[in-house]
Length: 284
Image (cartoon, rainbow, N blue to C red; front, side, top):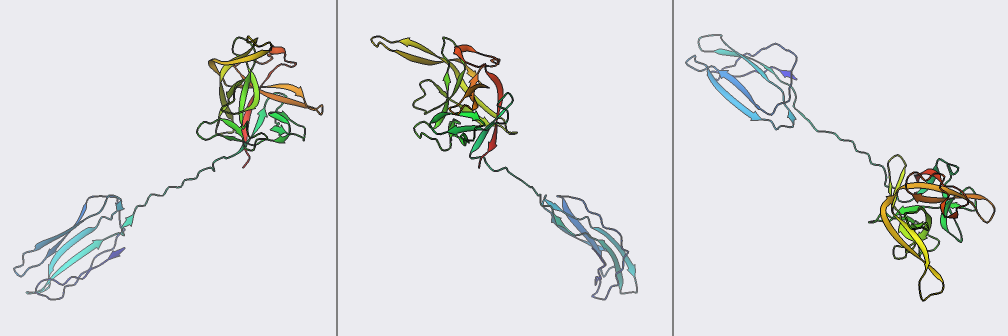
């Protein structure tokens, strides 16, 4: 905005003011803005008055140009011609836009790769181990991650006593891959609860301690028993083993083990293990 001011100076008589117009300029500043005006006095000597104001650092302030000229219009009258160039002051308010994806509460697990590719992990009444099955009798099972531990568990378990998902270690005397089985934190005798993380991009990352189970006879018992224990190391890789349900429909049992077990046929498995990636999709 530009304007001309008419100032009354010297002995209280009227003073004529005029000035040219020019484009305004502005620059961010936190320095004081000083305006100096020169006034005519009775003795003909100009006097100077200065006003200053300090603009805060987050305010864009204008630079004001002041041009002063003292001319004489008579023996007792002086004219102060002043040209003021001003710009509006604008507050600089930073704008930030934030968007957050909604937190996932429940999710499904989908196989990627191998013969189970694209099949959602399901559950079936009287089957207490989740499987990848295309049979409609197997309905998709919703999972959650237990707060505080990150343990994988069913959102609505068939058997509330065993809400967690564990790995049942294979038999032997060294770390052996194992399959998914329902369990509880206080009853994971045959293995360990699976701890998972939902990665951005949809990959499911899980881990369990490596371990093995050994079958032997404990005197004075006549029957044998299983002794399962954790070993040094961690299992992070997923596999599937082909099997058949009661309806004669093929399903794929999920496993976890160390890297490089493709084709593994230990422990008398009827079919070799197939490497697979597990992905998660929201079930909310």
